[in-house]
Image 1: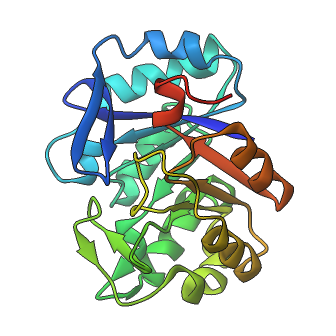
Image 2: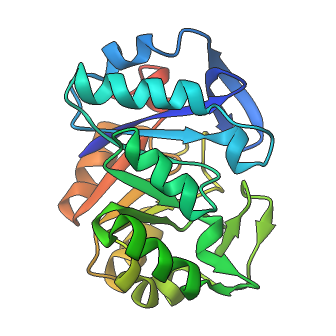
Length: 229
């Protein structure tokens, strides 16, 4: 299943290469809902919040509300969700799931205390843990801080706290260089939980191949540039 992504930065929908260099920006963010309305799920990621540079809460809330009520889409929201209060707030917008990355870890280890409290407050079905990886290691805080641990090592331990994993290959993010099929296959063998793959996806055949091994595809750049054929 293909899941379109709207990444928010400074009030615009953007696409970044490796999470750093801006490749494109769209000012009329709400118009993207019409473009993406045929899809079942939508990802909204607040990049400013993820990087600790403010937030796009008002815009994200409006997107979430309209996607759900006007187009009947299910929505996942991520980016800078580091407190229980923030997670609860976003579920009150109507988001089916919140994506938690940096807050799932503390001092280089799984932050079980936070995840237990989060599970109690919003429920395990509403939690997706982001396992973003650069050169084989998990990265957090807007992909600026690298941990020693690898995604495959922690997935089993995180399963009790979440409903799914969002796994982004930061090395290929925004490059349209093709999905790292081998890596995603390793992740698939490491957990029975649903996995959403992101990073480098450029063709429908890659999405089909991922679907055959039970992985959904979150796609940004290739959708915005109309390269999926």
